[in-house]
Image (cartoon, rainbow, N blue to C red; front, side):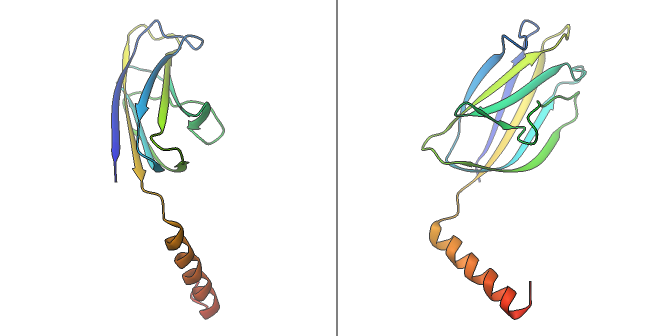
Length: 134
């Protein structure tokens, strides 16, 4: 289970239109957990999004952006990275904070389930339903 950790500095000069973009090379698989922690004093004025192949994937629910103030935000995900040697673009910006802030990003990627294992799982699920165990 690879876990990718990245610390990025969000300068005061990074605006919504002029974002700081950092590329993170990860392994192929499924993103299963994401954690974002801003340095204390961020006051929810700094923001982060993660893009994969041009589309926003983190946060995935309803668009938006990740913001915080010192406390870690951790949530489960299920995002398939189907390309060989995928690259994630992390975009950060500052919406009026007077100091540069650090963000810690942690992404857990699990290997994809092989096709033969998925077929076995589907048969087992059907058997549970048939026997009334599900």
